[in-house]
Length: 120
Image (tube, one colour):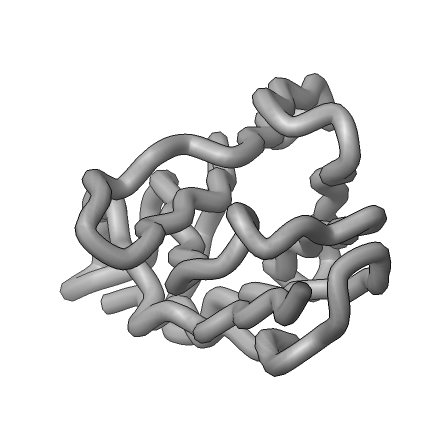
C-alpha cells in the first residue's frame, strides 16, 4: 500500500507564504499525477494544483506553485501572498502503482490533510 503524509500547514498572516509537502511511502513503483486539493469550512473539496510525472503542471491559483521530487516521491505546494479565503484543510492526492505480492497494483490515495489558516 501507499501512504501519503502532508506537512507544512499552520497559521500565517495575510500576505505571507507557506510551503506544503506531501511524501508518499510504501512499496511505490511509480507515481503518475500528484495533486493538491483544499476544503474550506462549509465548502466542497476543490482542486488547487496538479502535476504529472513529467512535470507538466496545472494550477488554478496563480499565487500557488506545485513541484515534485520524483526521487523522493514528494510533491510540494508553494503558496505565496496568502489570503484569508485560502484557509482550509489541504489534501494531497496521488495515483500510480505499487508492488504487492510479486506484481503491480494500481492505487489512488489521499493524505490525512494539513490545516492552513490565514489571518487577516
